[in-house]
Image (tube, rainbow, N blue to C red; front, side):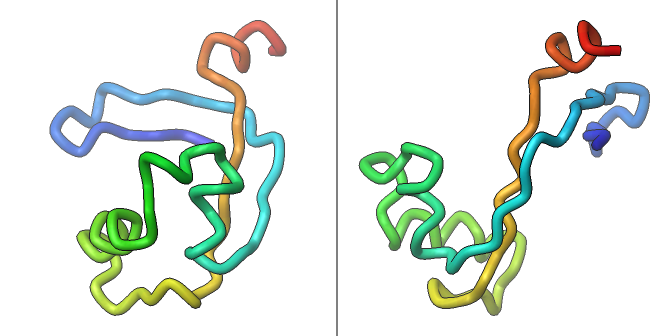
Length: 75
């Protein structure tokens, strides 16, 4: 997967995806070990900046990946 910087398209990061998991948005913070930092109201507010109609019950996909450095080492 490649990430591109919106402000500078020349900046990008390529990472190797290791797992994709579908789950309701309300379960994501616990799944990634961020339950204390991302309570439901914080998660919902952050996601609505990108997806204004999203609800906590909506199913989202958590994409896990290696760091760019780990990815480069595997290639």
